[in-house]
Length: 274
Image (tube, rainbow, N blue to C red; front, side, top):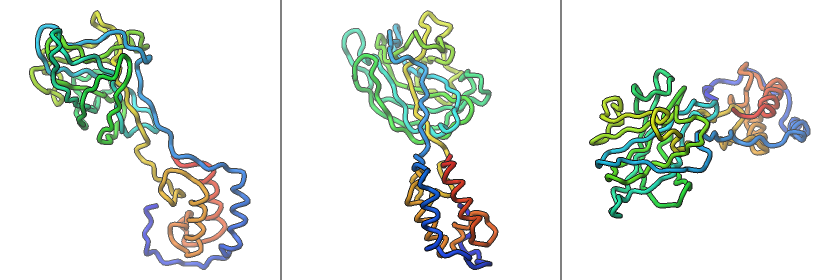
């Protein structure tokens, strides 16, 4: 769709849109409207958390995270969901309820965040939603590739346990990590004084941290309405552009407005948008 709008038409249209319209509608009768691209769920847990974890002997800035492999069609992370424990210490004194949600890249794709690079951060607040329930955070849309990390960071009081873990995850803790720091340290996690991969601890399991991904590129040559779906309105828009001999309807990019553009439109409409 990135064609120059001022390209002159080099040939006239041999078929009038009035004649093409019923032919196109007949051809499309057997095609259902094509919905927009589906979302991708990134999940390591089974939905049930068995225990909560936090610092037992000191206040700390706590970061816990899962790693995921990017799935085609889910390259743009738009939402993170988290199941929490509690932010109160043993005396019932609450710590900070400010939550930082971070997306990090793994440059070596080895699921080890020691060399992770920070891509984006968003903030929200903790809320007590009940055991194994999730809070959804809409985050700054962040494009990922290969292996990436979804991290949660909070300032946590001693004997508070905000991180909920599922020991029944198929990943068995190999993709889940925890860090304690005196202060926020997302840009240099490897310098943290306390680093644990959960598979190597007594608390084997995956953090109940999930992410939602969407296609990074949703544009499509025949999605003329730009709504991510192909339907009658795109057909009508194409016919109007075709009648006006607009370059956007010259799908073969040959300067002509003819049967081949119509055929190309039908093929792309039938295939759907990426």
